[in-house]
Amino acid sequence: MVWLAIVKSGASEERASQFLGSVLSGFNLTEDSPVVGLRRRLIDNIGPGLRMDKRERLALVLKTWLLWSTGQTRKVIRWETDESFPFLD
Image (tube, rainbow, N blue to C red; front, side, top):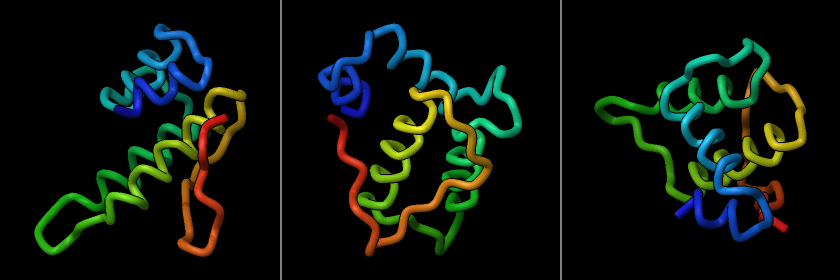
């Protein structure tokens, strides 16, 4: 679903696949890549009693895409419920 949303927003299929592949694999990422920050957040929320809300998880992925696709760096990825939802243009 996220891949399709990214492609529908104007990104190439290759770029969307590259992003999501990096999120899943964690390979070839610099320490300041927003994907590393996203992976940390997602991994930190795996385990008994830990559960991230679906809306928050989607917001984090979309926010990370927006950062990554524009070449921005960020070590920590956060999304607060009072923050605007990161819609794709």
